[in-house]
Length: 357
Ligand SMILES: Nc1ncnc2c1ncn2[C@@H]1O[C@H](COP(=O)(O)OP(=O)(O)O)[C@@H](O)[C@H]1O
Ligand SMILES: [Mg+2]
Image (cartoon, rainbow, N blue to C red):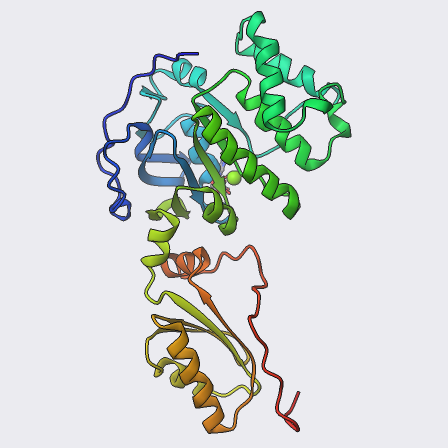
């Protein structure tokens, strides 16, 4: 199917953190320029700019209330733009909303498929709604059902599906009219970890097989990290950082994180950790527990162990990790956005005999 879309020029006014992408040859699929949304006196989106290249999976990562859904709703013509503009597939959402609607698929945050209909009926209604010609309808439905691995459930009532299967049905429904650009608002929120990974694989395959451009929102760092080519971190309606997962992590001073727990809490740990070589930041987590950002994880760890031994102090646990998007979020916002609360501890040091538990 051809869509006859106009191609956008590279979006002007992209925010500085977008530097380093350097893929100026790739055409832009969509862009927002200083986009603003006000609800009365409250500014939910405060002048955000970015552009998404064709074929990219672009993520909006941020906590609840950051303005992610509001951004998606403006870009998909569901709510008016207060100021600035959004261009999707070459069309201004405010001036040419019908053209935008024809070329996009949208998966809203809430599940919206009809529980009392079968899987196939839910898709069929959408295909008709989008005026997919009768001859193409059946083929499209079979193709999208296959793509989300629901072919054998086509006759099942939607209410009998698990949460993960329903999410996949919604993804299929958003694709039944063969859109070029796909918007997904929190596609895996509420799913168990296994279903979540299944959805990631599915989206990756869809991107490749259908040459889709995707914009998704998430508050899961791991999801953004694993799935997205580039990520815009949003917080309180502003864009705080933009780049590939690797670029974002490299932009944080200290490329490793050492997590250490001392058996006894002491006021001196903070200063002693800060004095170790390579250390750029020390965050106190709870009594005796510290996260140490360092440019040299192994050297800092060695010296930390030596320092503790010299002082006769026991380390209850110690682990070294690469910088995560979590650290990126903390760096840019001063707050934490941790989805997976517990990180693996690489090794645990047994307490010395006679030490306090
Ligand atoms: N219709 C509305 N009227 C007033 N405030 C709203 C409305 N929709 C969203 N908001 C507010 O805008 C902010 C951003 O919301 P939203 O875009 O849903 O965030 P996110 O999707 O990142 O969780 C929140 O503070 C929310 O309460
Ligand atoms: Mg939301």
